[in-house]
Length: 232
Ligand code: SF4
Ligand code: SF4
Image (tube, rainbow, N blue to C red; front, side, top):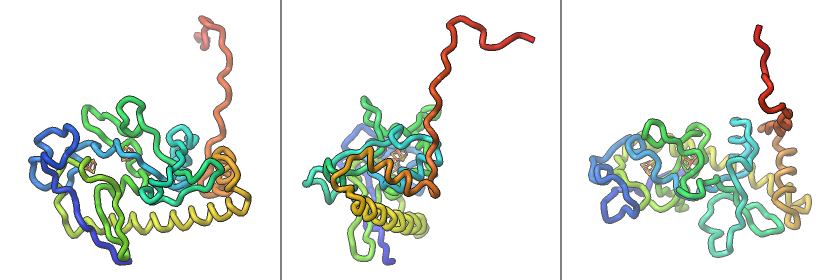
């Protein structure tokens, strides 16, 4: 694989579209820019593959719909999303992480004593891992999102390429698995079927790799005010 990092955010007051603290965009170039920024990019829409969604759901013991939702991609935006689109009756569809309805920030962004941190850091999707790089992979351009959201100055070091290359390799493996899933889905008449049917289909296909939690049992009714423990 031939991989080149084309550019990183140089960050200037003019380029940055939101209200980042001035210290960030005037600061020195940093090799750990995210440490001081705390997630300005977590307002981007993060599309992920079915395989990534199942990996996260299985590891967190959550239903996929607890943290992600399906959205139909309008024809004009098809090229914007790099993940393979799911062929459904409603149209080509992608899965995206849910965001807080008011702040529009990713539901996984945590406030840790005032610092913004990703609550699923080791499980975060490839899009999050690759932002804010613009890359050239085997001659093809990959943009992960507008660098204007990134307020810090990035120091480009030789060691930056290694984690990026590992992410790109894993992303390719996931995309191939995703394409195989879509092929099987199409063979089963998926083009005319719904999102709910797709979820049931892939849950069955992926159950040995990424088992999902059983739905929680209905809460048992308890009389209000009755003691639920007995003193010794
Ligand atoms: S990638 Fe940029 S915007 Fe996102 S957390 Fe790091 S420094 Fe902040
Ligand atoms: S998964 Fe983590 S890194 Fe990605 S948008 Fe959400 S909080 Fe940010």
